[in-house]
Image (cartoon, rainbow, N blue to C red; front, top):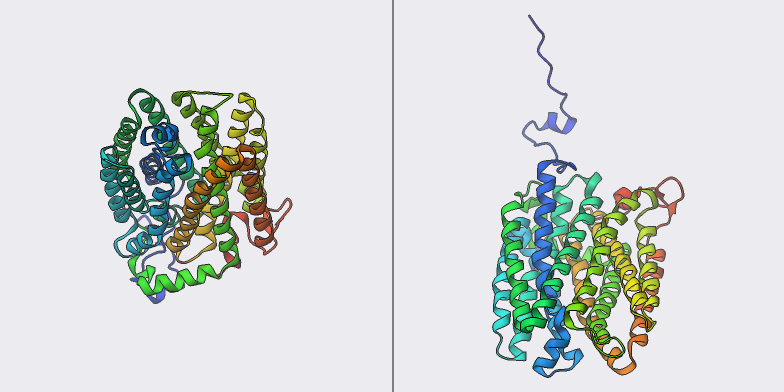
Length: 439
């Protein structure tokens, strides 16, 4: 009689408690669920970031039509990001109770409805109100997406998955701006906003269809509202997480300030470019699509710390090229600047969920809070610098922000040991120093 194969030996914990389920290891790279997660979140990125920055490509047109200044027109961006920033923590609390996927579905659906109402705004004040509400609804996506990735994807591939998600967000931002520019020049900024909202609606539907149900989430493990508050307090006392939050604030603020006001510079003398041509500068986002994934792969060789610092250095080099009065070096500099930013952002956003071995949703929410506050505050304040002192002062101030970020990163995170991929704390870049940091 043939011998039946024996069952695998149970672990000591399972032997003591046979009903205890095996720990969830996450979907491996290449699996169907892994691909659906990345595709679904990519479409969520399109729906989110196409809407969030839908007016950026037509700010000069909007300012002329509504008879407001450059800094006032930029409030349509800043208030949307303020709305997102102030809701990332509430969304993370809600996600702890109802689940990551359901919370993202609620947020993206509400944002889509509000986005379709934006072209109907009867006044500048109503437009700003709708944009802020839209941003508040959109807070349910970036606040939760990275936590969802870290719970659902195998830890060995978490950095690559986060890089893929960030790459998808760059495509979303690019798509919205490329749609808005030509539509705005032909029919005005309202038509541009409507076109972007229709694009976002299609992307939201694809997200709802593709995203698989969560398997790594447990409402009990989330710990409830009081547990979330304790976790938040613990994250704010973690110097490595604080360094990432400062990085997010400074780099995103500088990044948005550059894109908010470069269009005004290129629409004036000596360039005098039309709105459609100006919208093409957002093709530089493609360099971010590439660099986000490339940077994630480089972490295995050089460590997150070194790749993040290199990204900020590229930002400074790219901005230095925009100080000329020649269009080609300016565009080349924008490519380098954008690639450097998204390389640094993909590392920082993914690193928060790895350093925080518990309370990942709250860690990611604090990162996004800092990220979008930077976009709102520094993105708007950059207009005051640009209007008062010109582009050179605007570019040099952002170079200063990048330099400050590099110094903070170098001080706060342990150095990698050359040739071993191991940090000074004795952990590998792949785990982001997880064993050296408490939850």
